[in-house]
Image (cartoon, rainbow, N blue to C red):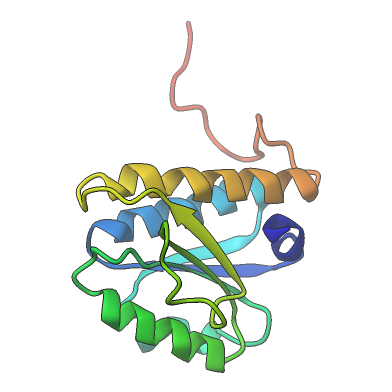
Length: 154
């Protein structure tokens, strides 16, 4: 259902803080690589300095908001701000977290774990999301265009 709604997007924003910033960057990169949707990852604290100008009706914004994150309250407030700007919000959070009910359009849940392990677990749903969006757009998932091979065989 999420992929079906986001497959028509032309732009997407991903945001995370601390250990979740690399996850946001990886999510944006994966979406770009296989679905050809322009996507950018931002530190959640810096999205207000430029990235927020891109948010308008139906622009997907993916926020990584785990309760164990020291900046959780700040991210929660930003999610509400993004909602007021009309973004199509997808929040990735831990199991049992209902703080985004009625705020986010879509919520993906990850098993609760130690803060240090969360990036490993939270990358998987974002990669699967990119995969399903690319599949629905008819993109070649196994051989994306214009990507150089990182390993050559002689």
